[in-house]
Length: 301
Image 1 (cartoon, rainbow, N blue to C red):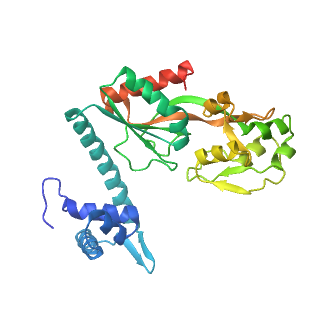
Image 2 (image 1 turned 90 degrees about the horizontal axis):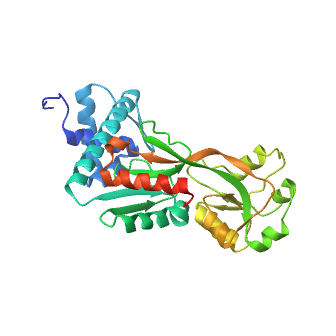
Image 3 (image 1 turned 90 degrees about the vertical axis):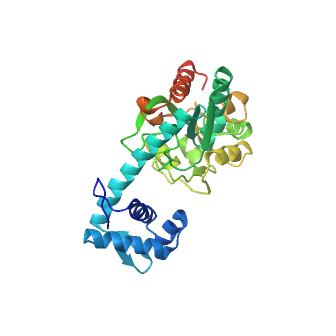
């Protein structure tokens, strides 16, 4: 392969390898790059020939990275992420002021969106993009920061603590009234709505009961993959949800949901603002970050 100043293979070859390694699929890499799987395979073979080592183990149902492949992928993924962040920063300077913030759908609906609206009224010249999803924010260099329960696994990201919540069972007023003062055994016998999340940092019903000393069986009769859906089910009387007391404060204040005492547990993790370090944020992004932190401190969210 031809070489340039940094003694690197062609960028198209490295890009093809990075996509194939990230997906562990030549087919999916080809779809992302808008080329054929054969073209991706050709690029990989050329790179392996240039390096004199296998980067993938070809198997009947797919491919796996070799040790050399893992090392190269880690280096490329880290480098591409830094390049992407730098390009995003340059674009931000050249275009209209814009900030991108991410959260789960429940966080967005319950307090982030109202906070962003209040920010926009104070700073209408700043455009804020909100991204809501109930899965971890991975490989999203377009996001300035996102709100997360518990620390993110990426140690390169900045973590700003927001608050530590309390966990308490919640239900519609009729169910909560019937269960007022109920024992842990009584609560465990109710229909519990379990959150089946890709993000394993969220405290589950079994973990909550265990921390409070209950060692009996916890039935799993109802699963959802969205906390917003879980809250809606509880509102309709379909069961109990493990309530994050501060997060769902608007629903508690409105009476749509009611906390069932006296059992309460301090959440083991905090909520964080996670993302780029302050020096890598635009002036507008820093302004929104400061706004959110201040609103949390003031009790507005």
